[in-house]
Length: 80
Picture 1 (cartoon, rainbow, N blue to C red):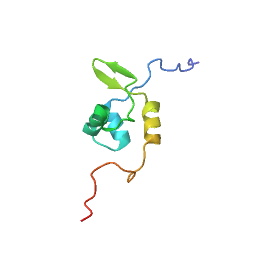
Picture 2: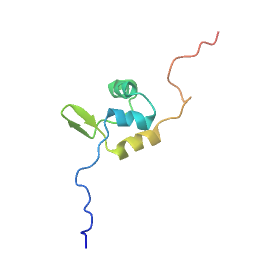
Picture 3: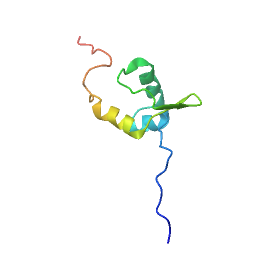
Picture 4: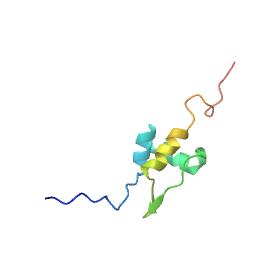
C-alpha cells in the first residue's frame, strides 16, 4: 500500500517572468513596478541569490486589488 503523499515543505515562489505572465505584462514592466512605478506592487516574500520571489497568493492578492484599465495613470490625453 503506497504511503500518503506528504505536502511539499518548500513553498513555490514566482520569479519576475512568472509574475509578468500572470499580470499580462512584460518582465521589464514588473521591474518598473518594483522600482516605484506602481506603489501598490508587493515587496518580495523572499530573495534568494539576489533574485526576488513571491508566493502565488501574494501576487493574486495584488492582481485582485489593482484598478482596472482606464482608472487613471498613463499619459495625459491631448484634448486639442
